[in-house]
Length: 281
Length: 281
Image (tube, rainbow over all chains, first blue to last red):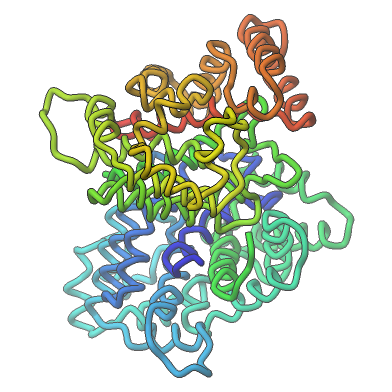
């Protein structure tokens, strides 16, 4: 039986392998400079940080270690959001807690208990890889994540914890929203993966499409604007309703460099939860 | 920078992702009951055994642990040969040795130093997964690997080490041959991977085809007979010479259930060596 750390790494691998997953790198599609093998190396590299979180190390340090390892490939940002989403869940799986508590519930407690030091680790992680983010409002410029460790004095001055950072960006970042809301879309993805039949790769594609039809992808909104994110959602609904094929949408989005990364991150979280609950590969 | 353990796991992942790799599961092809995701889970599961070998644990125990982990998926035998081939190389990467010694040289010393206990661990590994092997000659029936731990008394009686087991099967098993000969085809594969250009997935496919044109695959010989193995080699040469496409050969071999697994194992060994020498992903 696999450990939580093994399941976290496998979740990242199964996520990228699921196909067709319109707009994202999958088993059959690469973006020009972001290829399948970058995700394989990213998952292998992230594992050391998952191991730290499962062993009870602080989330911030664990996250920075995971991202440093993930970044040891030439594709750039492969799984930043997926690692961020999975990390409290992995920490929860490695922690003691009341038997009746679900993994997302325990993960939420761990997330709420994060410190300013955890926020500092999160900021340092941005020094290892370029991550697409929105410009902050002018008043929050000192806290721009792209400043990396240069922003740490401002974090300390304001007493901002990692939980506080997630709260502040939950309205425009679907991963932060999962943290703040208690991982509802990850849990729903896990339920979908466990109740489906067929090879895991096909279940991943199906659950991904379900999530894509529900909410505009926040990574697409950040990188291409709200209107494009809205349009992707509409086309995902057309696929679900049989008016467009998933393959055609996948090829079109990849050719335009549009990748709904946040939706993929949520599926990775769902895969981790499903594997912990016994999803067989 | 990745550790030897991370590189070993990544070698298994990059091997299966390389495409087209005629006859084997690759990024674009599955066998009916042996799918891409089984290899992902197999690689994740094998890592604990690689970690033991890198830390200096006995090869037999490390191998059994790797195979127990690898087998925690529903596809059956995914990477038995690749793990067996890589394990002494991983142990060598974790060990001290003279600076002028190559990794294959150090791995050969470790392989020669294996014990009867290591052979026992190797035999126990067969209890975790079904592996296609030839029937032994009648006199060697007590040492049939398929007997698993039931064969251990016969091993002890004869004082057979893991090195001795490999020597005894080197003439009909290309992985055992790599052990006994000092990993020459793995080293050649590493050189090919490092000198090629382009994405790693394409380099893997190219090096795999090179190896397939050199020698009949011993796994194909075991599972389908010498004549079929010889014919696969001829067709691989036709691909190399431009008289058949790799894709056509891949589709045909997969449809007939022919998979040149030993050739893939050698490429995995080459990937590990190349990653240790700085192959960038």
